[in-house]
Image (cartoon, rainbow, N blue to C red; front, side, top):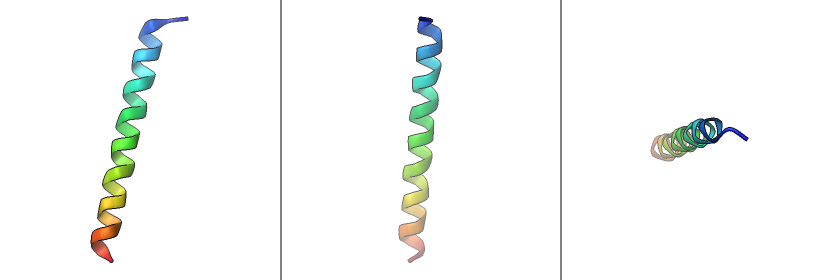
Length: 31
């Protein structure tokens, strides 16, 4: 159980969710 791995994974997941939010915003604006 590596804490560093957990921290990296959570940061990647957060970045991905931010990207999803941004993509949703762009799609909403284009409609």
